[in-house]
Length: 323
Ligand code: NCD
Image: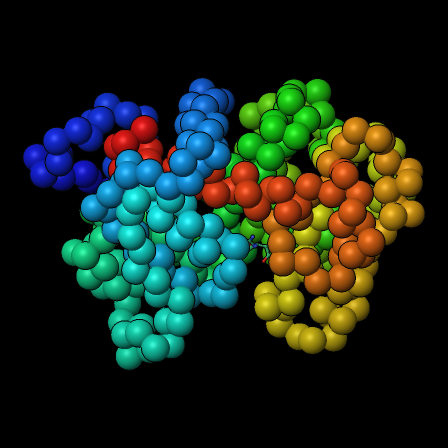
């Protein structure tokens, strides 16, 4: 997008990193950008603890445009915007909007940006956010584009790892489940390849990490092991990142049924894991983590959601020139 710099309200920080930028892929982030984002997220966390909500984005409006179901991503962007004093236009049920009349995505975003200052977009097609960003002059934030990327989730995942374990370099990260269709693991692998980590990719054969991402991991010299079982690597794992088998991406029910229960994390699974490690999941969970795991202090998935709100507050403040 091209920010309309002449229309900046007084007080915007025009030189702030990410001011006026779209957030479409994690590939836009350097390690320095990540440090900056997480520093801002820390400030947000401290402010929320102190005052709950404050007026940094007062007068700003977010259009939350969701063409696919969402609980966490949509409500955490809403919470983030409201805690910063801004407001939200929620568009969750596109079937009740003009999209159902056949409106194109470029038209929808060019209309919404006449009312809003930033657009958060979730869409079933890979590249939808990039397309929207091409047409919109206000920032577009990708909240998931089909099986493509989910950059804000990967940023909050990385923030969670840093907060919970103190470091990223030197860790062994094991991703398990649907690595083919799970967009969160696509973005997170790309982001982790900026660090000195080892990656284990555990999935049924038909749900392996796409070749494109395996190629990128190789190019970045990230030690990566592709496996069909968890047993041999659970003991070395610092971060166990569990994903849901993405039922909605399967073309036939039978293939889904064949793999849906492939991996289930139970207290027994964790009995072989380190005492200091974490279990993450972008949620929603279906059956891949037994509920008995929830009380284990290593289960970080609900804490992960809260970190997400601080990261999204940081990103909103950054793209709107207030961080
Ligand atoms: C994920 C998503 O939508 O990709 N959920 C989320 O945003 N927290 C993961 C999923 O749906 O399995």
